[in-house]
Length: 124
Image (cartoon, rainbow, N blue to C red; front, side):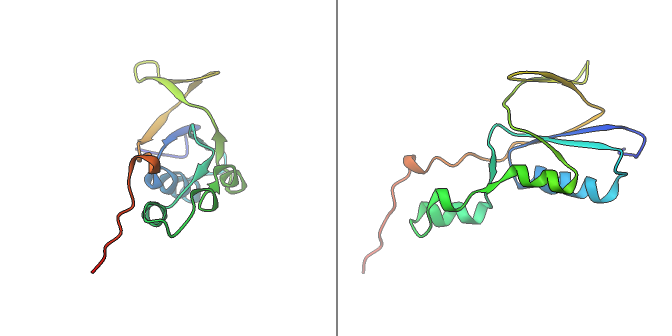
């Protein structure tokens, strides 16, 4: 159970669910509780937008939102890849550091590989 007594909540974010969870925690827990999002990407993109990119109606570069913006809400952001999660020691190892946590949310999300799909044109 999450509570205001724990001081570290980490969210390994790769999808909308992780970002939503971090925002929900921030709204409902004390400001003394540290909430951190870790992601190897430095941007967020709504899943619906990915469909527009795949069908060619929107460009990838203009659809990204910087994840650093969540720091304005009191959520820390670490832009690194997670190398290892050790549930026994409650630690996360990223490309440059080891972090401890009280609670961990893992939101895997999906990766968009637009160069692997062809855009199909339907003709009558």
